[in-house]
Length: 409
Image 1: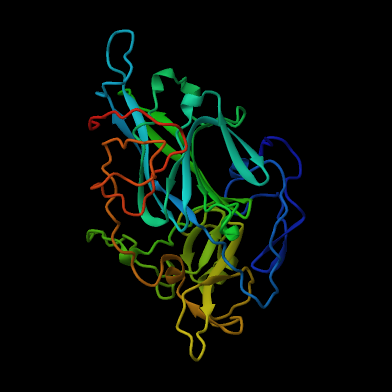
Image 2 (image 1 turned 120 degrees about the vertical axis):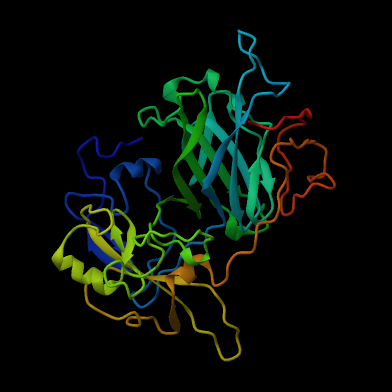
């Protein structure tokens, strides 16, 4: 794997395209959306971009993400009283862990967990392999649905067999402590969704009391066999829909207005720190007054305005919500309605990313700490009386013994 920021050389082309415009690569060359080291989480071979560059008058179309793992929901569950768990030499019961998280899927997905895994790209898809079959979980299939809970108590992690350097990601070794891969699996019926997957890379931390926790590293989205690195935008969350307790702190930021003028909505992203905190007018003024982000005070290299537009409804057609993003890095002052493509109308960026309506409450999922019995000859349906709405738990591996796990600490 090529290591950025270590060896001298050219890693970027002389120019790049963004928002339908061409820009020269800055010097010293750098990754505009983060640190250069982040690029090491992508493949080390160039791939052919399967999309045609849109015309200048056309908006930039967003890629369709069919599955997403909510990385903030990733956690370790501790087990220590499992009757089938191995014991240490002293006779003390070993402490084992399993992974749980929440995910959303617009298609059927197959989820697999890999520990101490290496990565290889074959035909544009990430393929992971472990040095020991016991470090790979069964592949579990789920139907489409939002706020689905992944829980697989049959796959437990025994950290007593791990070395300290295996808990963290080492670029030189190229081994990821844990990889969660969710591959869209609609078969050959729906050709449009082939080559789509979501990957969550994570590491483990050992605490002074001997317990462990999991820490997400990076997320990758594979669309049409092209791998994209997901980077967070700070300040884009829809705070009006969050159930937060009122705060007495007058300095708390619970609005979506520009942090400078406190009137216009935020629509300009500061790079590479990725703070969405300015309106376009204040961002244009900031370019000539300072070169530091008003939030983190780090120097910025570029300002990126992100405007959301949607197609205007026809005379007889209902209003459809299918937003696209109109990105601009141009330095001319203009209002929010300038340069809108014909046939489109501007909408709030928060509406484009969070939806026009709040999401309905999550459907109750299976009990977290009662293991599900898998049968190789079953029909893939959950046992009667168990609330597994929207979830198909058919497992690709052979039949497994049914066992019972007690609740974790």
